[in-house]
Image (cartoon, rainbow, N blue to C red; front, side):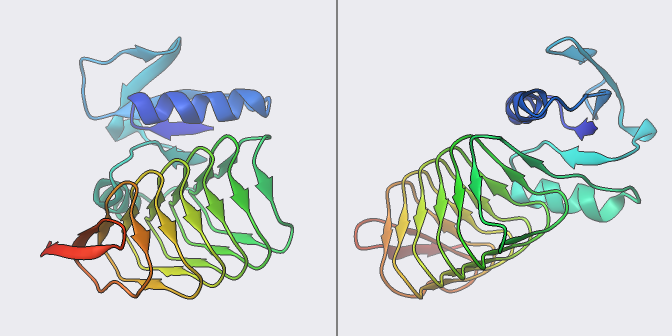
Length: 194
């Protein structure tokens, strides 16, 4: 497996791959000053090959890179994650330590389901979403492309969160959130347009 991006997020994905006894061949990065990460070589991004996981936390940068490459993308699931056999997880997505993915969940391409997050039955998570550590998405929640759900947030059953929005850390989302907004709090409310 190869990784694109040699920073903190890559370190966690390396841990996931090591826990699964999968080899890391090398990483790629645009920063030519970085030559290694955790003992693995970091190569010029012009040499990119797959199978590849984009190991960058920014949703918009992950999308830009994914759309610019013509390679096979891998997936990474930590063995401590609990993932239903009835879930569907698309290419490029990573599921981190202690996360739970319940039955009939649909995870899009290049998503991050971070440490200890819980995604319950029938949730639909579109491409390039980041579900931060210790979030709880109750049943039948939908999250639009590129949205970032902040650490420790709770989304109650049936709520729809739009595309490219940000839900602030610790928020409790009790009603639908539109596209392209920052929303925070308990009860979550829109602060501004993005």
